[in-house]
Image (cartoon, rainbow, N blue to C red; front, side, top):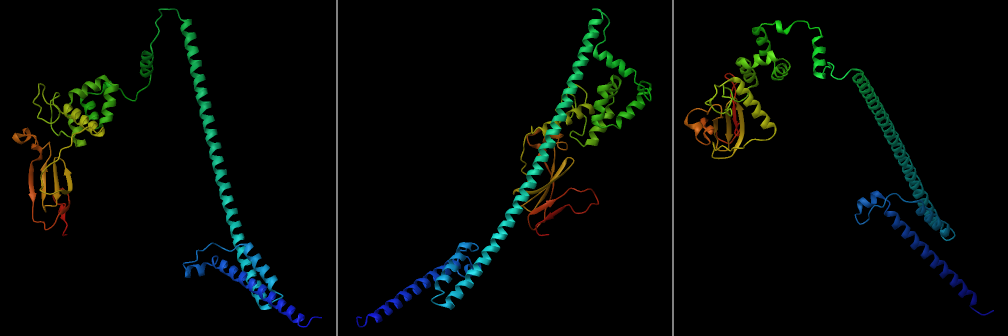
Length: 360
């Protein structure tokens, strides 16, 4: 036996155990550092750690492997590693269960939505099939009627007294029983009935009856009532060859019927967007509020004034109407506001104050 040989071997064993313990400690510290990225509270307190979500099962298995490896060296370190492995595995298992529940719910919602869409597609297909069946039935009925008419035409000799569609419709309408005879009504009663009708009812009645059309053409009070109830421009009689903005100085005498036709033409042009824009210069600053009633408008401005402006129906007479822009005539103004006028209104007598300013 060589002297001192056993002592050297013991030292080598101690060095190996120490190196192994150091390696296990380094691996444990690395696992703890990796675990920090899965701890939400720690990441909130330390912004340098970005939260990576709940820990995984693989991390728990790494802690368990370290605990088994360090068990024969240090029981305390092995117990601590085992406890951390159990904690990580428990949290990972809970997270996996939550994810499974969420995926199951999403799958259920997707299946329910797919069933709803399938039901809607089935309903739409049934509706389309029903509409197609109805169209086919209607086409079959039309073809049968055409065949019947063709057979009837071939059965009658050429040149016979065949009734046209209009004549057959007239005879069918004449055979309908009426509650009273319109032709038996006096002109005064028929005119009174038409005066309480609306514009669309008057148009339909005049298209359906020659007598009522003649009465409407000669009853100027009927058109006056329609024009005034609609509060439509122009509010006076005009000539048939006038554009609605004058006094009826054309070749034909002015009538309310011509005024009604001019007003409906203006409304139609307005709905189609065919109009001319005009800017008035009643204020020295920009206008902040406008209100109109009939043929008068009022506007409030940042120049601390409220002004009344005459619209075309009011300013049509005299030299002002003949001058370009004459309808912009200022009828009156209200001064004394300490700030910009932000709201105004035209009210009837007794309705109260109609303007407001920025200072209350």
